[in-house]
Amino acid sequence: MREEIFKVTANDVLTDNVFRLRLEGCTEGIRPGQFVNIAVDGSFLRRPVSVCDVSENELTLIIKTVGKGTGWLSNLLPGDYLDILTGLGNGYDVTSSGDKPLLIGGGVGTPPLYLLAKRLIEEGKSVRVLLGFNCADEVFYEGEFEELGCEVTVTTVDGSYGEKGYPTMYLPEDYSYYYTCGPLPLLKAVYDTASSEGEFSFEERMGCGFGACMGCTKKTKKGYKRVCKDGPVFRKEELIWED
Amino acid sequence: MGRLSVSLCGIELDNPVIPASGTFGYGCEFAELYDINCLGTFSFKGTTREARYGNPTPRIAECTEGMLNSVGLQNPGVDAVINDELPRLKKCFSKPVMANVSGFSVEDYAYTCAKLDGEEQVGWLEVNVSCPNVHGGGMSFGTNPAAAAEVTRAVKAVTTKPVIIKLSPNVTDIVEIAKACEDAGADGISLINTLLGMRIDLKTKKPVLANRMGGFSGPAVFPVALRMVYQVACAVKIPVVGMGGVSSAEDVIEMMLAGATAVEIGAKNLVDPFASRDIISALPETMNKYGIENLRDIIGGAIDG
Image (cartoon, rainbow over all chains, first blue to last red; front, side, top):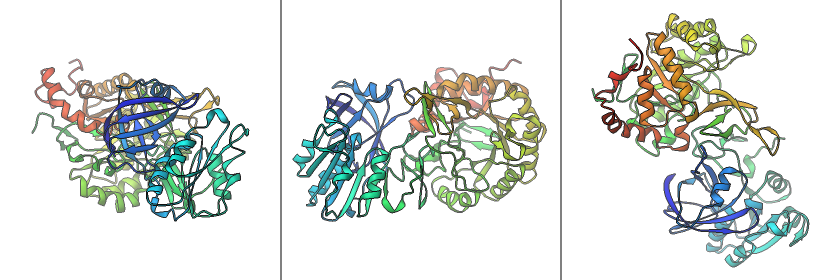
């Protein structure tokens, strides 16, 4: 974990309530599937946001406006500064992917899969991506995944764009491993339907984001784990689903 | 003795700053970030006789200038703390640590404290008496003077280490409870634990916390905490450890003027992991600004007579 100051270089609208921040600052050590925790004016707690992309001096975050804190972030302008804790959480295990990994994202669970896809493509893997949204207006990043060289399928619940239904209805025949991030019903559907081993990225309300407060504990087969420090990525065999 | 040093129940602290229980784990997360030997000490995560999972999630809610938590004393149990956490701590912290203990019966408290009494690195026992007494039908030890005194006596009987009783602010008269603990042999009083609070999500129209209610902490509670520290410090002769919303060197000084011998930092550690270190660094300059030579000279300075 590091505490760094980032400068906003761009704030782009992706959909009605999803925006993308490009931030300039130190991105040392940030891995796919990790998250950052952003100090937000007018809020006591920081806001945890998954990492969409990093390059040498640029951090990219995609955020959905859901409340006051994310609302404040959505109004940032180029030149504004942010205090961010970086390098939080375990991240995805890129070494488990096999040759034909499948990435399954739902809604704003899609962004962390982007940096993962980039790393897997760099390692010469053949990456398939399934992205699920509610409707055409909510779709984002299909083109960006394609530009990386992924084979992309988009689904919408109402069929207004791509395939109609849910990502799990369009699982390919053949994949070596999967990585997923999205709303709980999607994660559960992936757990129930996908045939290979895989990894799941979870969301939880957090206090600190670095393992100190026990605010975001999750029960697993390997005991009680902190989503922020031991997760947010958990392997399939660790998971326990409770209603 | 340095300008910042104070003595807490006979043990010298390099400075009065103590990260509060529940906001600092067992120290190792913070030791990865900076040398935690700069701290006066810290109070480790509330430890019980058996391992506890705690409450269902969500356990955290945002508030104006503060937060709610309903963690529910998640901890690995006293044996794991002694076997795993304390040996790990020894490698990164060379000072006496404050052991925070909770229980659900008088026997629980005595059992856990007796075990920790055997640990060399434990300097003080901070006994949290604001948990539900399952034996007494949901009544809290910390909301009843006689029950708080009973826990104090039971713990004092099994340890030679200083015993600091941590009090709940969710009571009508905290002074009465503090005095009962002092009469029962407590070596110090720490306060305040969190204030019981609640938030409701307007979208779901349900409580944000799975446990419905939780403990409110953060800068918003500072004036309430300060008032209670002042009231207790006026009424007891034993040292008082002040906490509740402390977020700056100025807050530390204010707490000490109200009667605190040492000051715990809680919620602030969670949003700024370097907060306790930075508050210690800022103390000398802040003392200069207000004409304070030595911190130990200002304890209770705002109390009349």
